[in-house]
Amino acid sequence: MVDSPCVKICELDQDGVCVGCGRTRAEIAGWMSMSDAQKVQVVERAHKRKRAMCASDKSNPEPLIA
Image 1 (cartoon, rainbow, N blue to C red):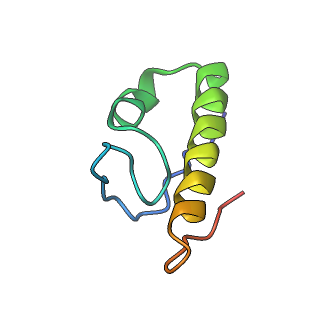
Image 2 (cartoon, one colour):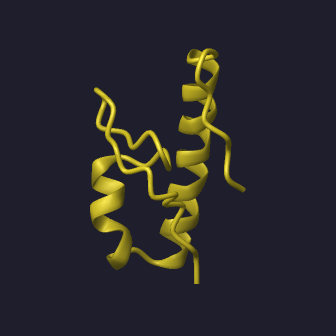
Image 3 (tube, helix red, strand yellow):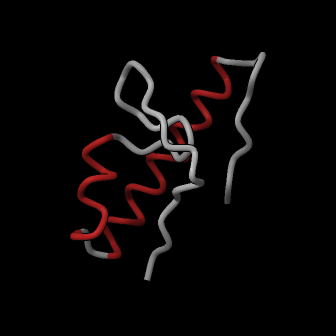
């Protein structure tokens, strides 16, 4: 079982990416029907997006959740 990366900061940016967990709207909507392998891939992509968000917003970085 793969835990959801949701950190209860559910707000989408202008690109449709959650500023809390880094998932896209489609990834959030499809989470419950994904296999564990798909969820692992989503979590990896979300972490990359969060790192990119933090790098582009040095004034208010979000902590990464491992």
